[in-house]
Image 1 (cartoon, helix red, strand yellow):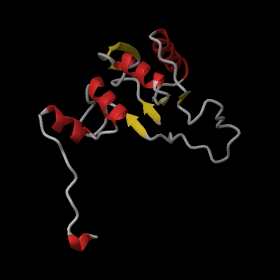
Image 2 (tube, rainbow, N blue to C red):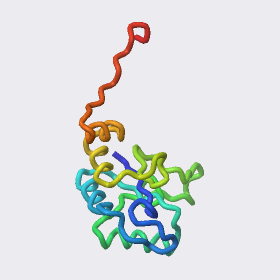
Image 3 (cartoon, rainbow, N blue to C red):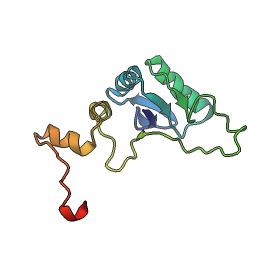
Amino acid sequence: MTIAVDFDGTIAEDRYPKIGPEIPFATQTLRMLIQERHKLILWSVREGALLDEAVEWCRERGVEFYAINKDFPEEDENKNRHFSRKIKADIWIDDRNVGGLPDWGTIYHMIHDGKTYEQVMHEEMGKVVEKPKKKWWQL
């Protein structure tokens, strides 16, 4: 699965243009996802030296991204007439998500087990969520 991950406010606390402290368990979770063969793309507003600093910060913590602000490492916006900065990913992890950023344990549980946020929350509260059955007129 291809997963796009924001940096500021998602992996590290938002102190842009500086790098804030790591959000608890962010890099540990990202390393686990990499070990499970997910392709992680760093998807950040950072550019130039600020982006390089964030990439190195992650690398020092054992997180190597498949690509950075691109769909794949070899992508060259200067050679592609149809280049789009929009990343093509299966999942986006971003602090600006509707409802905010879940904790990294929940994020891992959702991706690893293929569950929705709703399902994970119901499980934590002791309820199992089943999809409603279709009525005969909806078949």
